[in-house]
Picture (tube, rainbow, N blue to C red):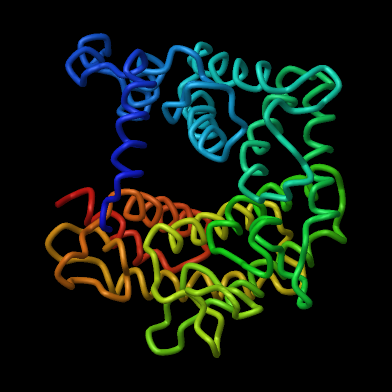
Length: 338
């Protein structure tokens, strides 16, 4: 991607505003116990770099954002596995800072109708369960209410954001659908499952590329965006991280959709197709996956770490849950063993 004067300024601005939060690898490593599991060490390294949990993702001010939900959710998983209470308290501190007593959320505006703002709500399920503080239940209800007004296309697919009319993004499925499914499960709302499933199926239908079996990053159903194909509405390429978001959304949402639910088999079919394509496009030298998956190996393209981590997570979990054949475990392990 060609860098502009703006991007250079932004990078400089980001560096200046986050210097107090950034420690060198040597400084962080010197404070960690090398005998601890890698997941614990990684968690603690983030806590050292960002003493306040709202500072995660190098934020200079309070922000209700998907990155916090992604990272703090993972930290709560580490707490569940190893039981270090300071990790749990670090996650709770973010929720306590952001969620007000009446259940409103600092820096969250419902009428923006951005699916990106839903993802951090997932940590509130566990935090409410542990603390019993009613403000977290109110916040969960508030986030769920966003789905009632979320703009949709004629086929029911959510717009990614109000400011992106008629667009569905693979990333948006991760940002909204797992929360939607878990809220329905925890609050006994079986009628919501059909809508959750429809989000996956509709997005797959709009983004699927029959030439290679992959899913494009996004679609504009109105076909008016400059990046939209005039016939299909699809974006031009398959972005590895977008496929990763989508794969993780599938394995996470399936946790809460009952086995007997109509349409659940469609999600399993999509997940199995992703597993097939991921195996086919794995880079044999590194075990990872390319940033632009439909141009794997092309000059200028590169093996990208975040989508590779997402695919490994999705494969491990899908095998463990029995969603895909156990042979895919070898695909995930090959990156680790190389």
